Image (cartoon, rainbow, N blue to C red; front, side, top):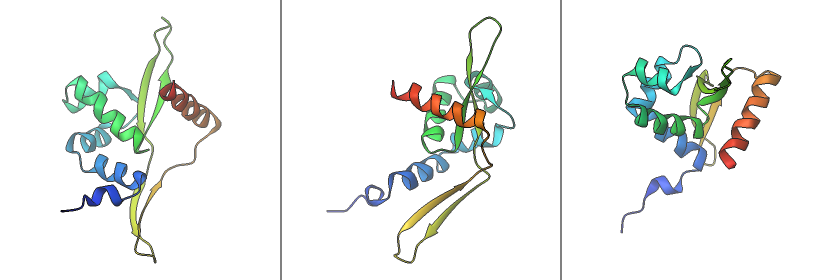
Length: 124
């Protein structure tokens, strides 16, 4: 019986590899020059909105995108997404294990607070 080798990889590594292996997800990363809403991303990348939401989940779960909030005067705030990394490295350790390093810019206090709120929203 063949083993599913992807089950042997750490969750973080597998989620990054899955996200980067997806052509639509890569298109989203390339198209995000500034924070954008899912609708804006869908339009810019020419990807159906329902697919865009799935790809955004894939990318945020892999820590490749970060969520923010666009405050609107009408009270209907919108979730925005932006690229959260400058480099992704897959390394082979001395113990012959794979590791993933996601290098990103330093977060300010506002970004750290937004990250905390995003995690709380996902868990509730």
